[in-house]
Image (cartoon, rainbow, N blue to C red):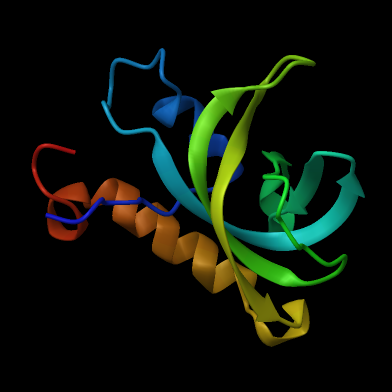
Length: 122
């Protein structure tokens, strides 16, 4: 079986944190626009849902202003809070080509109707 990586919004991250008892899986995927790059971290702006800090790998190549889908593990940040440790990224191009409100609705539907989208052991 392949690894299931639920799509999330920033508000869902705490449910996938390793300390959470609601799930044993911590790998997620999230869509957003790269709004800041600082050393080994990036900030992903996720529409009107807020921002997420991404901990980058040394060989990460993100570009400012690009729409990306990040796959990673939910983790604690050194400065407090929760972020995502990058495992992989897909550049999706221009954020203007994405209707983020539709994406948010799809993500919310997958969390309300988990049994349709994910195995029962998730």
